Length: 91
Image (cartoon, rainbow, N blue to C red):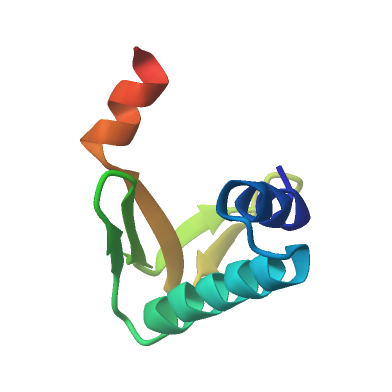
């Protein structure tokens, strides 16, 4: 499902115009992104939690040359599904 598909489904289920639903989807993504960029997390009851994961600096290996390389520390977005969502997926 793409962002446009999601907006169309929201429009159908809520009675909003397609353009309004697209604005809602865009705004939602922007708010979640801004919160994560600020180091926060977004928790949606019954769905899951978006948070930021810290990855430590480490050494790796270049697969083509075998040379040891340094991999810098980084941050990554993480999603943890709520138990209600897991139950829906598995049963």
